[in-house]
Image (cartoon, rainbow, N blue to C red; front, side, top):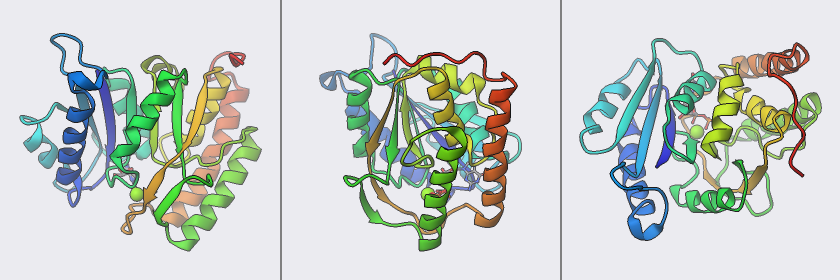
Length: 256
Ligand SMILES: Nc1nc2c(ncn2[C@@H]2O[C@H](COP(=O)(O)OP(=O)(O)O)[C@@H](O)[C@H]2O)c(=O)[nH]1
Ligand SMILES: [Mg+2]
């Protein structure tokens, strides 16, 4: 079974269209002829809506589609942050592999096939990157977000000793075993949770692949940049602190 986790915070405007598009795409992707998922009797895919305490109609809209699509709703009682929502959804997912991506579908669903191929070729997790020469950015984020993103990437790599080109691209795929190892250890609730995932991947010796993606930014972002910056920086320091205190468990050598 293939799982998709979608973190949702006040997405009433786009959620129904997103769920229908995801349902249609996954039905095609898991059709018997496609050779992905679908063992006898089990539904071939599930969509986990990880609701982050939305105060709009998001949950009702997802519930309304649950008789037509294999949708499960994981609800956080209050808004805790994208990291908390993704973690709850990833730990609730029952499939293998497990994807997560943003409700606005900034990265088109057609990219899933390449991610599945990279997992089949041996990666434990595959993360999208917008900062690769082969990435095709159809609509950029506003210039201040692009600039802040670049600073964040440098800072996160320097603080965590990594060499990743894009931490925060909201399109990632995991083998179920890798997802379980990462998300049972993850602690961050807000925007640096992506950096924690990549840090943990290295810490656990998992095989990581970065794949360039297409991206068309949605103009009405939910991100409040000022407070997100400060909290993200504090969270990067928290990753170092957790690592130093052994909160992530023993480090493992990478397979290569
Ligand atoms: N901004 C925000 N998004 C959240 C939160 N929790 C979950 N999300 C989801 O995280 C995803 C990314 O949000 P988005 O506004 O598109 O971020 P951006 O593309 O980085 O500007 C969406 O699917 C949101 O619904 C939260 O607390 N704040
Ligand atoms: Mg977005």
